[in-house]
Amino acid sequence: MELIFELSKPGRSTADVSASDVPVVNIEDVIGRQYLRDDLDLPEVAEIDLVRHYTNLSRRNFGVDLGFYPLGSCTMKYNPKINENVAALPGFTGLHPNASDEFAQGNLQLMYDMQKLLSSIFGMAEFTLQPAAGAHGELTGVMMIKKYFESKGQKRPIILIPDTAHGTNPASGALCGFDTITLRSNAEGGVDIEHLNSLMTEDVAGLMLTNPNTLGLFERNIEQVAQIVHSKGGLLYGDGANANAFLGKTRPGDLGFDVIQLNLHKTFATPHGGGGPGSGPVGVSEALVNYLPVPRIVKNDPTYSWSASFPDTIGRVRAFYGNFNVIVKAYTYIRSLGTEGLTRATEMAVLNANYIKEKLKPYYDLPYDRVCMHECVFSGNRQVAQSGVHTSDIAKRLIDFGYHPPTIYFPLIVPEAIMIEPTETESKETLDAFCDAMIAIAQEAKENPQRVKDAPLSTPVSRLDEVLAARKPDVCWKKP
Ligand SMILES: *Cc1c(COP(=O)(O)O)cnc(C)c1O
Image (tube, rainbow, N blue to C red; front, side, top):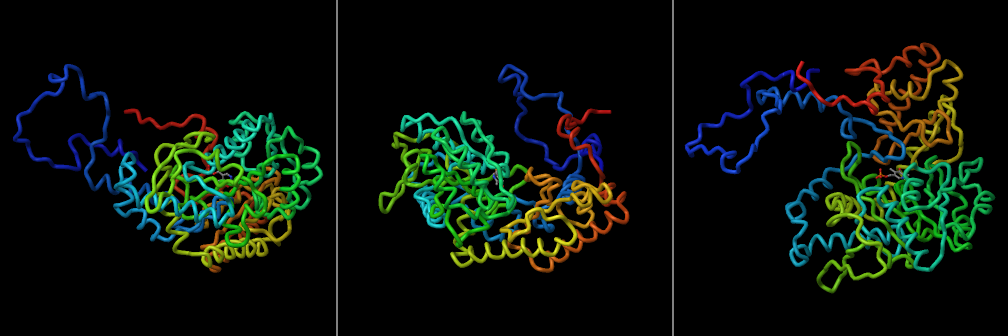
């Protein structure tokens, strides 16, 4: 496909503006310096070229609205358009972020109610909606943990992180100045309790646990894990990015978590990707409420206002209201589904993942063969041994079948990992068709491995050098 610059023809334009009847003033004479650059090479194209160019480009993209997107740990589910419609209401989009509280009552109430809804769904004392994404929520949570121990006068330099954790977990710990120590998993994919017992001392601020973890497995010993961490005065942090696996079934607060971050853009509408906005609210137990970011919304019946007078706060972590429109979409999602709907969403997410796990088990290695939650993790080891076809080849071949590849090579403890998260919104027909494609690829890997290694075969470009693209991106067009 040509670049927009290559379509350029001198004099073409999208707009025909009639000649001005206002006297021409040279702005550079007025302000006394050059104002417009003349070294910018802008493309000159007609409106139809412009529309076709970008429409064609958009058709080379892939999204949840186009097809199945089983990207493990990312919860790329379909989101009803009503969430978008509500977030687009002028009262939400038109409010100036600097408007005073009296003009923002409805928006403040929505945020206040959202905090209360999240607190009750997750069993936490309070929530902040400020953080802009999951990793930002983790950072906020760990900052609160740090401040908690500082104000108690305790030096605790260590945070424990399981070997299955998302990479953002150790990053958040390290950014706050903690040493991160890796906690081993046991043979069934949960926390190795003996290892936890040996690591958990009074030098440890806490454990950052994802439950269900990134193997899609629920931590069976969660109460014991919480008890061990608490017995040494530590705090239990929960990475709640996988919350669609337990809505309405259990609450982190009841399981012993002291802090938890959510990913509204995974669990509660607004699929992420493409660098779009996210929202990573953080919930805390009673012991940490004073450290929440400011400003916080306070209710002075019947009105709402911002307040920054919380002396122990970690301060502000995000400008204005956080990513407000993501919060509106998530609020709409929760209100339209209700308790029953949320519980059912979790049941479908777990059923769908187990359906895929059982269907593909004869064809791909399944390192942890037990009931999974919202996702299942296979290994491509068998295909590597049989014919040298790797997980990355299988992922590329899926593109030819019209599917977005699953997450691959993560979690790190599974060699050649293939992490499939079907989500709650997919029908049995879609799951069956995807499984048929995976089975066909397993067959092809045996019979015609080169074809799989050459994939994708149906895309505008085939294999790209992904390292080169990341290290030396060529984004500048130069006139030939
Ligand atoms: C996605 C994810 C994160 C990070 O969330 P972002 O919004 O991408 O910053 C953290 N932990 C887990 C388990 C995740 O799946």
